[in-house]
Image 1 (cartoon, rainbow, N blue to C red):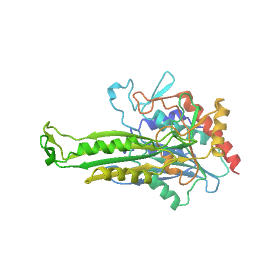
Image 2: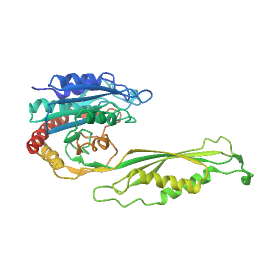
Image 3: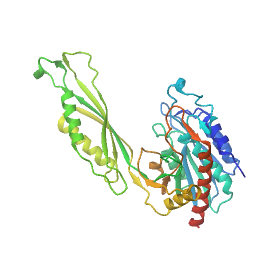
Length: 379
């Protein structure tokens, strides 16, 4: 069979699936997959305000080896729609570029994978797609509960490729074999309100918060590791909300994020943050959310197959990297080895997001070549 990845990408983009709204994107994809012989499972999890989230698990075949593709149909908001030169959800092609929200991140890659499946035909094992509508949001009712459902129903894959836009400058120049972990912390320091002229009658929470942040910033977390950049702590917000010039406020708040490599665990960083806050502020509140741990899929084997497929189609030797933010690969890695590879990502989340039509076509060729190579080596 043949399937046009551009037409499918356009159909997906025309669904304005801004998290947590699905807007029909999952149904468009499921219909295309059923036409290729997949059994589809439409799974909805969660409640407002972060849900409900529609997800899709589709599988063709019942035996091993089992290869999975991971992705998301949800997209970020368009921002100022008037700043777009084309309708963000019209999926128009201009000068060889498919323009629309989600073209690069990552409806183009989903369409390329489905087209690849059509091109390779039957394979000696199983193929599946793990598709969520909650990657760009809190990721609470998307991939994590979907993976739980897969485990319960015996759908654990042997390897998974996540189609995030990993290419840096041109298609095929970069593959992600790991990601740093992420910790967010919300710190509230309570003091005692009072007049600025009588500081002995008050307790200034701002001074305590400043000392806390200085202590946290002073620590050099590490200098990096074999595969990862150095961990970094960034203060992302400080808020007091005091309209008066002669009042010591009763409360001060801050927010921070740590991107950490394989020299740390989220729980250890959380304990460190809580300890520093407690040392400087008797009355405080700390909320910590560990978005994901760092992970590395050791180069070799699976990543070699991905790199070889890229080289066969493009002639490039991709860089194996762990740079960038987090993705749902951080969840999938608990089931199987995971590697990320997709379109160039320079325009993702921006006005006039686009993917070159030629890149989507070549990505389908790369995914098809990967499937042939992976199933040949897995037998």
